[in-house]
Length: 226
Image (cartoon, rainbow, N blue to C red):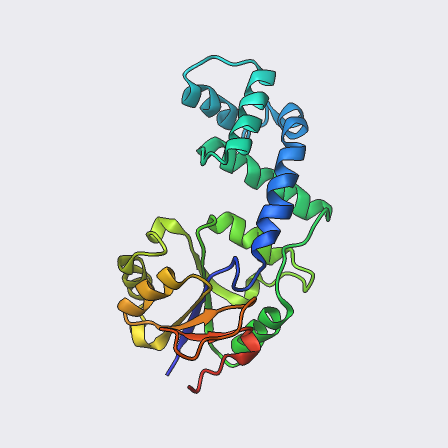
């Protein structure tokens, strides 16, 4: 019997294109003005100093901005850049420039499962901070009360069995009573190897009845009784 559900975000509850077509371009378009306007603030100043440390150079403010934009264009996973992007996205959410994308079927099913007493958790490669921002600012309102906890790659890589062992251990729930939802086969393989039940979201293709994990097109097709 399923006691709790752990779900991925991109491609599962939310469109992959939201990050690619909304969040990343928004950060690039706003990072210069944001840095100029907030450079001396306590949460921003250390990040700008970290840019200099990472480059090994003393940079002017405009040189820091140029470096950050270059990192964005290179898709570089630089820690100060990721932190600044999170702050810019937070401002965008709060200003109403965009909402966190959520598929309607996911929003409704998550609410239904919560009302049935199931505990819900998020496991995404995006930071816990970014996860909370997305679910706090959806067109369906603030959905963070639905979730009992969040996991990112601090718990381990999403394609590694040990990560799911760690999650089950932290939740103190037997793995066979946990359901993991994702659109990535390798993640589902790792979860299954750890003993989780698994469901594979294939939103843009026809479910394959012979697939290694039960495939569905939407949350509406998920039955916890099977």
